[in-house]
Image (cartoon, rainbow, N blue to C red; front, side):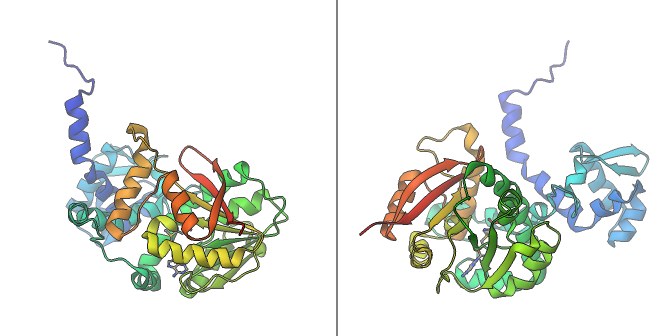
Length: 338
Ligand SMILES: C[S@@+](CC[C@H](N)C(=O)[O-])C[C@H]1O[C@@H](n2cnc3c(N)ncnc32)[C@H](O)[C@@H]1O
């Protein structure tokens, strides 16, 4: 009798139920440094285990799991090599996913652990709030994983934003809550006349600029330390807010937006977020997954109607919405004429 390999609907559900194992396999392999060691050449499990300070048996089994996922190739016996796909997990790979793997292995993993509680209460279940963000960003190791994860995504989004929106009328673009300022890199590459400013917590200043040293536009980037809950300094033609509003409830968002409105004068604010469609379908995984993560920390992804209402409450009006790639939109807002 022929054995069918076609995935049945039941198989697909099994894949969904068990999918979390992949997050941990990848995250732990990266955390233990196995990917970086493999990138130096084929190695056997016991050498890798010794380098990682881990058990040879445990590492052998973890490497086999990576082979199942196609991230390493099992060369026979206990020897493995990194595949091209696995190479994306190297810290210095051109389109690296190193930070994202660590982010999902720890912070996202812990956030999802409390999602049931958040669904029941409607409130954050993971540690959150303005002071918590400050604390997290002051811990160099976990902050670096988080900020790299953000930067890895924002590099691409910045390049797409440069294609989608015109910055010819601007001199200075300020990335508010910009982290390492990765969004600015693509914008400045495509617009040689532009200067970029990262506005974020003072603790990130040195690490953000060190990350920028590895990019090509460092001489046009400055760092301003402060809190967007206190004030945003004036002087920029464009304020960028990427992945900021989704972190916060409406009340916190109004404070941030009020401060941006006071700072922007005759310029414009570009809010880069994924917009929740009025009717959700299977293609909307990215934004809906993001929304559940935000539920666990007290934020939310919003519909277009919710953005209109939120911005209106802060004395702003939406003057355009531009899709910048298959996921992200740039919501342009300006102070409402009185
Ligand atoms: C989700 S990350 C987004 C980073 C960046 N915009 C991106 O998308 O790549 C949120 C950012 O807000 C910053 N942040 C949090 N609280 C802040 C505050 N009170 N003032 C300024 N920045 C803050 C964090 O340090 C972090 O860089």
